[in-house]
Amino acid sequence: MDQTFIKDLLVRGIIGISERERSQKQDILINMVLFGDISKAGQSDAIEDCINYRTVAKKTIAYVERAARYTVEALASDLARLCLEEPGVEGVRIRVEKPGAVRFAQSVGVEIERFHPTGQQRRHQAYISLGSNIAPRQNLIQAVQLLRQAVSVNAMSSVWESEAVGSAGPRFMNATAWISTDLDAVSLKEQVLRSIEEKLGRVRSEDKYAPRTIDLDILVFDEKVLDDGLWKQDFLAIPTAELRPDLLEEQTGRNLGEIAQSLKSHSSAVVVPDLDLNNV
Image (cartoon, rainbow, N blue to C red; front, side, top):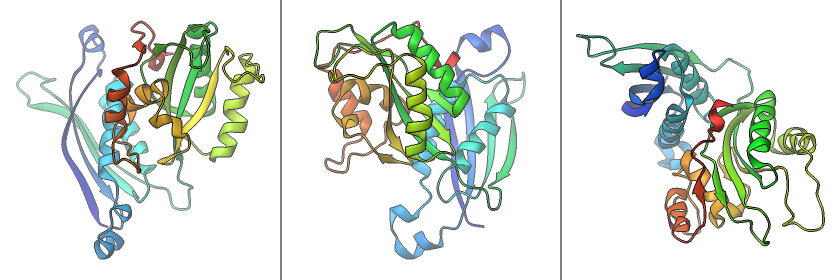
């Protein structure tokens, strides 16, 4: 089977069991071989027919920076699962190493192979915005906990606080969740997101700027942007750019990282340092 590889991807993240390892990030070295038929790309010379190794790399970085796993075995298994959710990837060989983890050894780690089960439906990946300006800390934590019961939450962005849009209401806290799910976009919205909003007391009114306990919306589903506000609103762009800075706006050719950086220059958004939704 054809192979696409990512070599010596160096990421800093939390991994290990000791107090020192849990308190500070360390180097994690990742090598991947993605198995999949690339003959169509070879004939068409079209980027859309290729296995998108750039996206795989960006998602790997975002995951490792936030996962805080205890073992390289668990981290390798997580990354293999995420790779197999990518279009065109039928199998993956992945090596995860901790350089300098053992005295006199250059590195220690594991190497695993995983393949997409024949006939099994490939899972969807999506980016979900979360916002609250009524007891926001409590409601964001509860929303993430409920989200984890319904889907796989791969990583959470930082929480950002900013002024309410369109009103003089309380300041909002916003974050973005990167998830995997077997549900399609409509079912995800109606069966999961709306259900969480109802459980947390969301009241919808004619005033679209009214304060709310929680607001959950799909920003991106299987690499398709569903909410154009992602390119314009600081409270959407800035958190999401932490997870997917490489997302491209077709009209301008700019990526989300560049757009978020531009929005920050005239935004009231500030990160909330003592609220980490990856650990709830």
